[in-house]
View: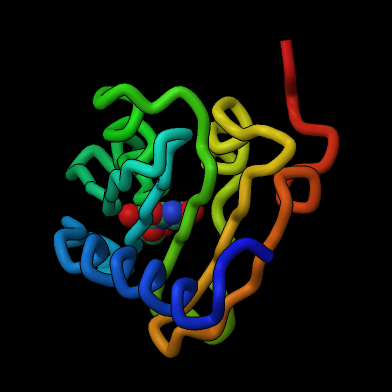
Length: 132
Ligand code: THU
């Protein structure tokens, strides 16, 4: 693993900070995410809900779209955090969007507020995912 335990905890802290901006008046379930791009730049995101529920944007996708808007080409590392019993499990839509910008080396860190975490590869997170 290319990150030390301390580095992982710091990355989770960044995602927890992003989570504080989540807009969740409907579910009250806040998600924070951090993506590190191919150049080492950090981009964060949170979930943003809407009164028309289906228009909600998940935290992972907000962070990725933020990154792409700022020059990200590929995801080196993504960290996702929520207040869950174990490390948060990203939804299927976000798994597919992460896949779009992942490489064979993308590191996926799933965590909760207690900083319990699980590190996964893209293939583990979305086996046999769609690809054009
Ligand atoms: N949510 C995320 O932000 N990421 C996921 O991977 C799953 C769900 C959000 C969407 C909604 O705002 C809230 O969590 C409850 O579904």
